[in-house]
Image (cartoon, rainbow, N blue to C red):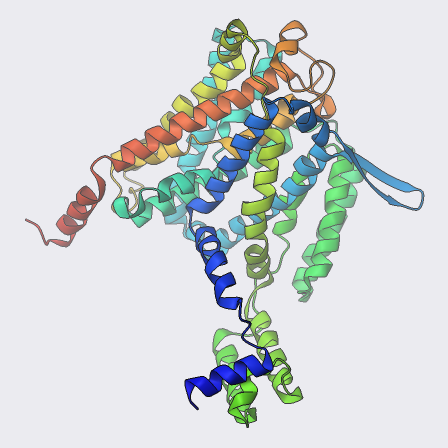
Length: 505
């Protein structure tokens, strides 16, 4: 069949739309950008810039009022209403923690955390990166004259933002070894486990044990369904929603429900890869025999036999893939490009002081100084110190091709707290958007500090100071990490590899 005949057939049956190539060319850059490691962090950074600009613009009132808009779900006499901000922080972020749980379970079963020899050193690094920043924060806050309210934010600099830190590392491309990404990812995941435990233990309210019992019962049903071979995502989605609602009513932060529910998701295949391969080959052979007229391949309506072949391959593909893999692949783009940017847009808005004097007050606020020091000093000291001490014992070795300089650079990248740090700040201090004085404004908080932290009421002063410390600290730590890792560059890495292989004397 000639090219002209094929073109005519395509046009006749309407399979190749005239605008399709143009549309593909337009969306191709977006698709390629989405697939880069830098993409998630870039979108998150853009949302942060928008939040800061909007909250300091003439339309700042609209920014804060939007997030305080009540959003309700009502069924008959039952009504469940929360401000939009809390739907973002308590509901959308539960999905984020759910995906983190899926990633951790995958790593434990088949990833870096599955091999104790590979996992222990990053776990030690993560422990140092949690404990030391908390101590540095507390020490700086006490030195700066902060009170009990300010000390409450000790958990803010203890977290690492995976998206931003990996995005910063991706800027260097091949100038750093692959093992650097593996090490950073592993200790960042372990860091997230620690941050989750901090939220659950130290930043939850009075526990309603009856509601917590309902959550435990729903989790038990999910685990039983896993053991019995249930793979339907609807089954787990409904029970996860039940767990979330029970946690919401229990006083334990509801995002923990997403983290725990992830561990009940099945991680096994229904058929093995070789069986899938043989089944798919047989089905595709039958599909090929069903094509009688070559032109018919361009018809939009396939024959009944061909539809059966399509369904068979699709069913086999679902059975060879674990529910954990399917959910992680399906939810990851939504988390990276919708949930986290929306969270940043809702929480990163800080109304900067209106006078130079108050700007100095905000920068010198004990919480600002504590968070900044925790991220820029505490994180690198904790991660690097714990890693090097452990490696000096002789029980552990640094990852392949990683020098102490690499570890130091990665330790600074661990100081990019952002998402998790802002989240802990919003739980510990409140969002800073409302509750009494000056919704989100630092100016008003100077005159009325120390407000109630319960139920997200918070203090605009501490909340704004924490966010400023997070932004400045994450930016400084990230820049220092990139500079350290870039120094020496690709040439030094190649030389180390060649020396190890004996290619260079």
